[in-house]
Length: 450
Image 1 (tube, helix red, strand yellow):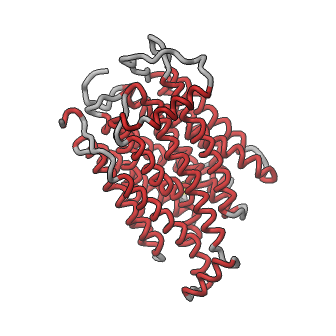
Image 2 (image 1 turned 45 degrees about the vertical axis):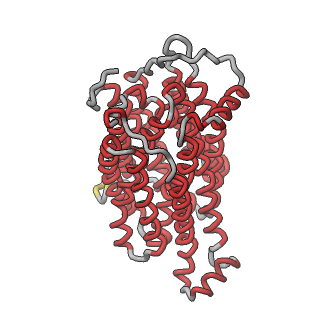
Image 3 (image 1 turned 180 degrees about the vertical axis):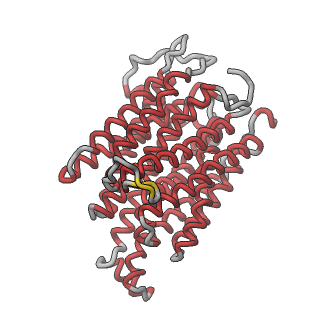
């Protein structure tokens, strides 16, 4: 690996292109179509989606630290464990999506299980993808490379939304596409899986793992208990790596809100503001353009200022925007806030990954990115369940919902929106708690600034 700061090497481009690929899944399946298809079209309550999504994240939180630990174990030569595991988990995502796409609606519980598996594999793959950042970057350009990857991811989500739109509505923003008949929201599933597979290929051809300076003795024969014992030892000994555990706990709170906003944005916008699915696609495209910009800007700032400070700015911005969402009734305000949310969303990933790299020893990157997955994925267990529970309890016709609506003197229309406003408010409160914890994370800077 050279010391050059360029991001235009083929291995960096291939690494970033994987972000281009997998965000097609997160945007089209998680954010835009699956939850809306289940809740709006099939009339299931939000809590059903919450169960499936949270179960997948719980499984990832339990298992991914051990997989991360395993990926760090190597002998005297590079054995490309992270690349191989990334391939397995990528294939798992694609196969699961293809499987639930062809099942009849009558098998909804099987569909939900397969959806949960697809998300587990998707989240698991991110652990190995993140750990490969060290193999394609240097301390001097890690923030820039990370930001480039995030930016490519958001470009991928825009491209993915546009490419699958004909399979959903039969047209692209009113322009009819010959030979393609729209199949509704579920029509996005198979095309998304195919696009994910196609654009993921380069990382497996062009990226090679960096040699660890002090190889860890091969531990393939070790049992799973050894993995969790060492992970627990790492957690208990975090005083050797100041700020790691505090950062992971704070990240738990940040990811709680962010993951829940992502997966329920479509439902919230339609139920509270009456924004149609086609308009939501335009909203997400505009927001994603600004996520690309935010990825570069905040990644650039992370290379020049302490990443801890930059991430603090981003989280404070998130809290402010969520408070606006919780009280807003004017669609134009929602559209104005969209680009701001996009900037902050791109910034979180662009800055958090290099910040964890600064706090962690290189020989434990896979293990600590596995722990990173615990904070984010365990939060994504609680966040959707919190959302589902708040919406369920405060829905009109239930004791809490009717009591609060009566107390506030709400109309029938506003009573129906109340559960979603309270759900967003609960996410803002969670992020505020995380920010308080985050304040004492050590301020670290890159070597060239010291």
